[in-house]
Each structure stands twice: as C-alpha cells, then as structure tokens.
Length: 106
Image 1 (cartoon, rainbow, N blue to C red):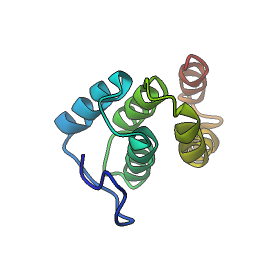
Image 2: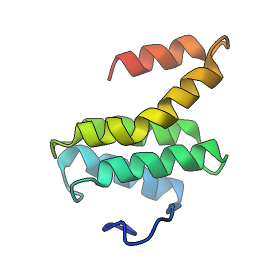
Image 3: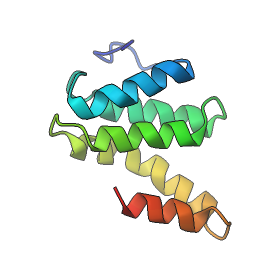
Image 4: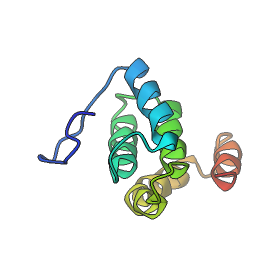
C-alpha cells in the first residue's frame, strides 16, 4: 500500500486490479490500522473526480467496514462526508433507492 503511513497528503491511484486486491485484503486485517479509512477516502475522492468507478470505491468502503481491525468507526468518520455527498447527488434519481438499500445492508 503506497503512502501507508500517510506521510504526505496525496491520493494514491491504483489500477482496478490493485483496488480489488486491496479491498480483498481489508476484511482480513492484512493492512495497517487506519488503512481502510485512508483507502475509503482516497477511493471516494477519486470516484468523485471521475478517476475511479463508484462501484469500486463503494466496494473498498464496504470492505473497510468489514475489516477485522476494529477501526470501522475511523472508516465511517472519514467516509461519511463523501457518502452524504453521494446521497444528495443521487436523491431523486433511479439510482437513489439501490444506493440507499446497499448502504443499509452494511
């Protein structure tokens, strides 16, 4: 994981395969504490900028929330502003209901 110690305020863009690998590693606790929150914020930010599919970003968030590191609260705190923004943007669209249902299942 690049920038694992958050040594510089930068977003790290991985290719889709590596995003999938990171999402798969999160639930097992294979990454450092706080990695789920950092990856979630990076993924949601990149998705908002059109550089990553939202489906991939939401997969990372879901994986981070399921991590065995005990820091789901960090992920919720870090990702909440972006998730609220997505919710507002989807409100009144066909995607609103599936998005809300998927969020309530987490």
